[in-house]
Length: 65
Image 1 (cartoon, one colour):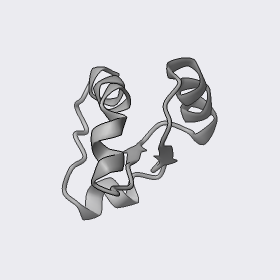
Image 2 (cartoon, rainbow, N blue to C red):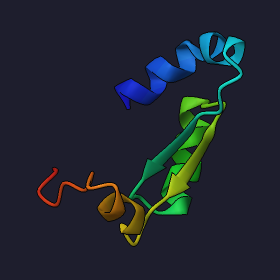
Image 3 (tube, rainbow, N blue to C red):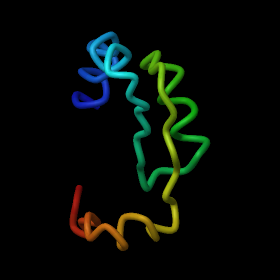
Image 4 (cartoon, helix red, strand yellow):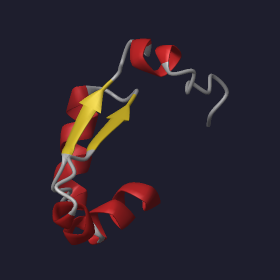
């Protein structure tokens, strides 16, 4: 949450770079939709619910709380 909110707060920096921000999470699309709305995130959140992308990038932490 902290990282995404920091990115949200610094969105102007990314816009000046013409960067596109896309966050990926293993949460469901419904959970991410609610989270995006609650945190007022101005960028897309993609659901990797089946953990395929996370595994391909070797960024999946099975024991993450």
